[in-house]
Length: 319
Image (cartoon, rainbow, N blue to C red):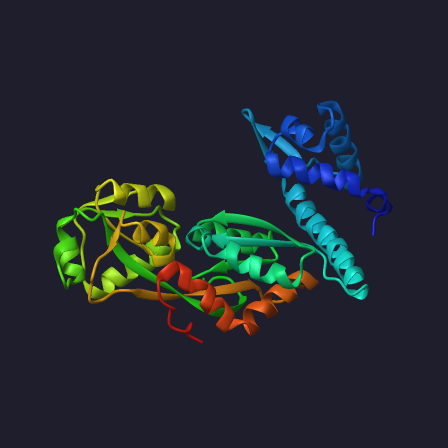
């Protein structure tokens, strides 16, 4: 190993990671409570030790060089091992401590906080860093090793994963009470195609599941409205802009208060399993191991938790 690399400091790596996250020296300085010259100085020193530039400007935008990408992965491993050490030392004292870095698909954001709260009752000293993104962004975070664990539905085939299905995610069709379809006692997917369909953005797991199902059932919607937010999609449905398919628990409040109604479509709900996953071969922290084991061993408790989002317990997740 080059002796220069042994002179790196954890502080330099912290500043470097802040610049990587913000893509800005000034914003990194704000986040680190430093001056911008101090950040620039730390990066220059780090570049001297690495022997290569770490950042470059194209126009007014800051980009990571190939050396920076390599260093970023290495620093992630270093800080991950230090965090794991802290957790293991806490475990030796008889108390699980540390932070769980969890990324979830946006349609799971209503349920996951309740799942973590149940876990935290057993481990009160554990904290949560929750990132909510769409399915495509979850996959990108998996490949970049950004999180301890992820929760998503459709498992990607392009990434080698260890995953555990633990709860079914029922996807239902909804519309506002005044919608003509709400007066029907029985519908088919074909009946819905006469109306505008509100859909999520490309990269959404719910959209991917629905599109595959529509193709399978030969249901073609001539008019679609793309909305890049689950919350905005729900509001658009309430406003009467169209019908939509979304996870039942994501609309539990609106269904409970009569703002939306679940349409009696014969081919629905569409069930997809929520899974907790991590990259195959990833070294899990003690907190991540404990959370994974909690999900594996507490299926009945998790199913009972889920009833508040669907009115009745979902079917057991497919194995």
